[in-house]
Every structure is written in structure tokens, then in C-alpha cells.
Picture 1 (cartoon, rainbow, N blue to C red):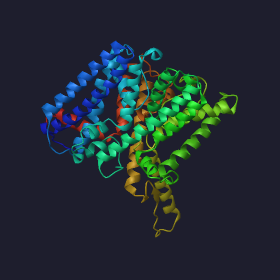
Picture 2 (cartoon, one colour):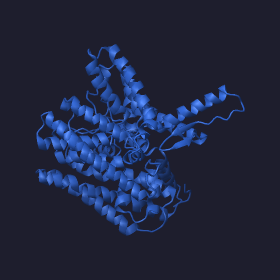
Picture 3 (tube, rainbow, N blue to C red):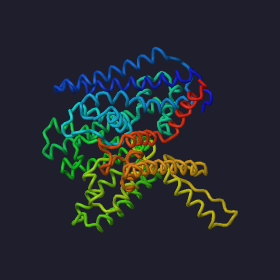
Picture 4 (cartoon, rainbow, N blue to C red):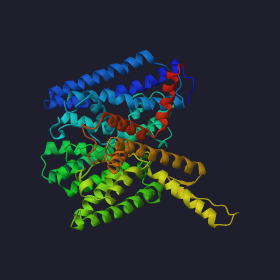
Length: 501
């Protein structure tokens, strides 16, 4: 951390943040093209305005701030945080001009929810939203799921050493390949290959469900991006319930789980090492967690009599459990039913699933399975130390791409992040309580925002008090970047306030 940054430091941060904004501007040309193709001229002009602003700012920072100075760790972390705050500012422009958002704050909320793959929405009349605008909502999830900093690594790939800290600052700890640029390109390759396969399978499934071909293709593409990037935005206000198809739900569950797997794990599978799924500490943790939480959810639903038959109970309960644990946010039931029909125990398990989340280095959010697994392993080691003789050497190991020895600092770091996430969840819940919402409902919504879980009990709506909207936006970006990058940017901001620039 730099305690006395100078103008050169801010120049470097602004340069790379501008490149991210430039990349977002280029991405807006895709929905603009669709808008012109289907006759949505007003929306097309909205995208051109947003893209023009982003490209002008991006090119302007390139011209005015260009430097070949090295990027330090603090530079990289602050750049990541600033990029994630700046990108939605421009992405929100076509959303606001579409007329489906009551204010710029609502549009910014939507854009942040998209990039951070949250899935909470403030859109009005979603069922009649223009196709190009709806596509942009899902494209933001696709960009955010892989990481908007990956745009820098793939479009501006001149120096891997320069942008290596940007990769780690976005919450990705392990490099899949020795070079971060090759790693970024592999991530895009995985995403695009899966997009082709997943969209095709969903399209066929929707056709069998009776949807017209072109409409089915459009919905299939959006559903894939929402599921694989664990984003949760839906094309229709009824979410997945709109399709009334167990087959569609089954395909989506597979895609959601694939999205919650880390890209390093996908790399192992692409190399033919399928045994990694059974040996990996994160897949084991997620598997046991989903099983345990679903069993308790089923018990809760059974006690409340929400479903009279086991078939519907399993169908809806298991889908919601998978959607919550992968922090996707797609749903087969209306959010208010969590309050009116699901009792207390089942929604509590949904909150717990969102809080835990998926694997580190994936598109999912939450505390992450690796941290839960390491804490459990550390607890097991400490118990063994107590039970064994004092001179016994206790060594605990775990498997994550290879066999590793558990270190005390790993357990301590995992526990620290766990505590920070719990405080983040609780903070949003307390704010909701202050504004008169029931604490259990406020905690549900706060966890959904901070973990990128995306499921909602109805608190998030256009009429929501603006301080809570701002708080949820902060939770989205803090949870997505896992604290450290935000702390770095705050350090630079403090230096400005103190006049140390």
C-alpha cells in the first residue's frame, strides 16, 4: 500500500481503468446492432450514446494518461476497484434511456448487479423490455462473470507483467497457465465453447417446450449467460417459472453447477483429469453442503405443507438450493412465496447456501467453498492435536489441483474473509431493519446482494429507499472483489483527502 502516492500513481490507475471503460463501450455495440436489426431504433440510439461516451473516455485517458510505468500491487488493486465502479456508470446509460428505470441510480444499480453477477433488478415492466436492452443486461453478466479486467488482459495484451496484479485483484488467486494473458484467453475460450454448447442444448429444450425458433434462440442465449455466469437476470419477470419445463430446469442446473466450478478445475477437466472432481476439496465441500442444506430445506417444506407431493417439493426445493449455492439467482417460484409459503427453516437454508457460494476462481460469489473447507480442515487438525500426545506431529492435507499441506496462515486468512463476509451480510440486514423491514427478510436480501446470490423476497424494487439501494450497490462490488481491492482504492482516496498527492 502506498501511503504517499503522487500524480504518477493516479495516472497509472486512470489509464488502466479507462481501458476497461473502453472495452465496455465496444461491448455495447453488440446490443446496438441487434436493436437496429429488429427495429428498436430508440434503444439503438441509446446504446450508441452510451458506447460513444465510454469510447471517448477510454480513448481520452489513453491519450492523456499513457505511461509505461510499472504496475505495482497497490496500483493493480486500486485499478480493479475503480474499474468496477466506473464501468457501470457508462453501461447504465442505455438502460436509463430505455425508459424501464425510474432514475439513473436505478440504472446504475442494474448495471452493477449485472457486472457483479448478482441478479437483483430494479427494472420496471420487464416482460415488455426491448430485446436489445434485455440482451445487454445478460451480456453484462457474461462480461462480469469472466471478469471485466479480463477485457484489459485480452484487448491490451502488450505486457503480461504490467497487468498481472489486475488479474489477482479481481478475486482470482491462481493462474491456470504460467502467463496471465494466456490464462485470460483460456477463460474466454472456456466461456465461448460452453456458450455454444449450452445455448444449443437450451435452444433444443425450449423448442421441445413449444417456443418458436427465433424466440427460443434468444431466450436460450440469455438463459445460458444467466446460468453459467451465475448472474440470475431473467428475460421474463417470472424467471425460470415462465417456461414451465422440468427439462429446461434440469439443463439450467447443470450449467449453474458448471459456472460455480473454478476455471482451474475446468482446465483440469479439459486435460482429461476427471478424477479431480472427486478429490478436490471445493467440490467435496460444495457437494456435502448442497446435500445437507437441501435435506434440511426439504424437511422445512415438508413441515409447512408447502407441497403435497414429494415430486414438486424436490423439483422446486432442489432447483432453489442449486441456484442459491451457485449464487445464480434464477428461480422457479415467486420470491414472496419464500415469505408466505416456505416457512422459516427452508428460507434460512437458502440464505446459508447463498452465503457460502461456489468455488474460488469461478463466476460464483459468496464466502467460497475453499475457505469453508480450509476452516473445517483446520478445526479437525486442532481437535487431533488435543486428542493426540503432546509430542505428536499433526499434519493436515487437502487436495486442490494437487495435494497440499494445510498451513496455519491459510486457515487464519480464510477465517478473516469469512468474518468480513458475515459482517457484510449483517450490516445490510441491520440497515434494512433500520428502515422498518423484518430482520429475517432484510438479512435474506442483504446476503443476496453481498454474496451475488440474487434471489429476492421482494424488498429490492423500484420503490426501495435510496440509501438501501446505495448500500446494496456497495455490497455488490465489495463482495465481488472480496474486500482487498476496495481497501486499496480507499487508501488512495484517503491520500487525496489528506492532501498527500
